[in-house]
Image (cartoon, rainbow, N blue to C red; front, side, top):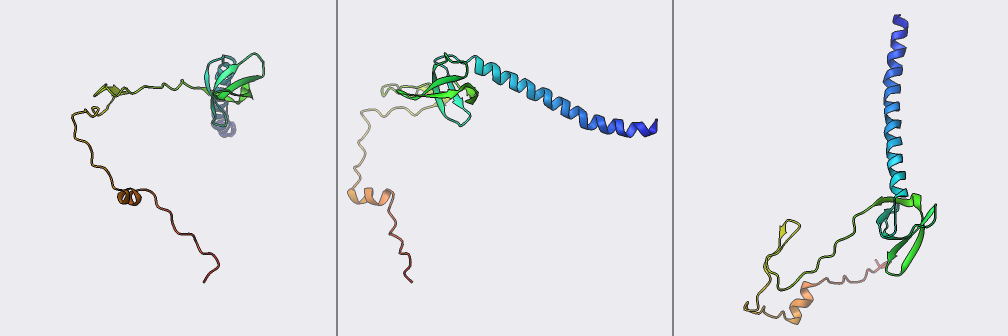
Length: 142
């Protein structure tokens, strides 16, 4: 009996994590397959290469058309879609709205027309405050 105890324990220590790992992997694959099958036109997606786009056409079983820029539609395998993403919300900033709160962050009040005008920056100050170009390297001269 003692001779069988050690091999059985060793087998359990190795086999149980393997079985649990494969179950988790199968669940993830099933969820990914379900997401890829549920893609419809108008969904915003990210591909496995990290490119974002909007699904334009899903009529094929194996491929989908993704619009990556206005008027630019590319064809991709369904398997290349990694995840659905929420569409980017574009907010318009109104100049006349002062002290509005966006996503929990309070913005500074808009400058009123009664505020004194800022002093104009001279041409010399503009040159020194911006990025400067380094002199060219002199290769081969010693």
